[in-house]
Length: 204
Image (cartoon, rainbow, N blue to C red; front, side):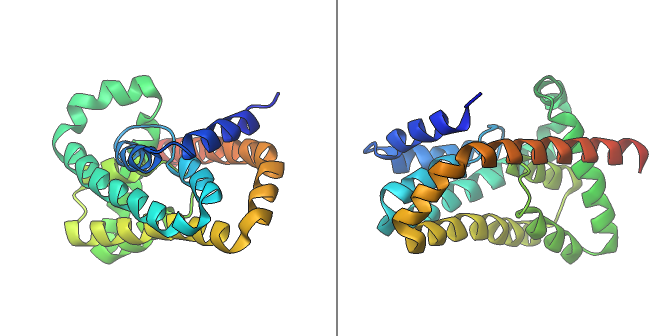
């Protein structure tokens, strides 16, 4: 069953839209708060379609994510208890609660241990919203939080832009050829990580 190939082709058509940069910025903003689709899904085909504008697209995505990170932090700090049923219905509550537990452990070590954890977390295929809400709930100091979000999200979008920019047509061709197996592999990894976080929250 092919799912990711057709989605990739559709995203390539969206990426060519004249308002694609605006859509990317808005998607990055919403994803940092609650939306389930990571902005790289749109950023990648945009960079493939216009590789010379990859750095600009990556910057727009990062800007949207940073504003969303601030909103997610504030909501986590002030509104988490009220929104718990919403996250439970979306199946996100176990991952957020596991993130809270981990961040509390890191906070006990030092505020900068949290920075290291959040930056490393940027390498994982875990939705950004898990970290933004958990950080607000735990009360990670804002300077450390912003640094970790800037570095963690920044390295993802700029590395992606660089790969497409310097890989050129070959990178685009290879991406389209392998998008289906890579999509399923990423899905399995995300499911495994969520399962591990739930297990850790209950039994660790």
